[in-house]
Image (cartoon, rainbow, N blue to C red; front, side, top):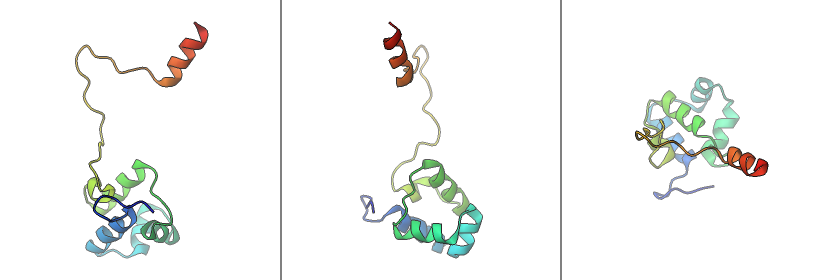
Length: 101
């Protein structure tokens, strides 16, 4: 169980937001296309939300900002590129280049 700086786990945040919206675990699980058991485990901290896509989906269904679920600022879009600055190539490409050099 990972405690965030404010002492709440992500699961506790999900439960708090769900209750604030007046939804049962069964209803939220259904809206997410997940089982009631899955949501119960998330809220109890037995199962971690290990993908940002899940956090974003839960926030969308609950109509809250993803920061409210994640407990920290969430970057949902890549930062804008500066003119003349190219993003670094993926690490795998760098390894491939060095292996063939």
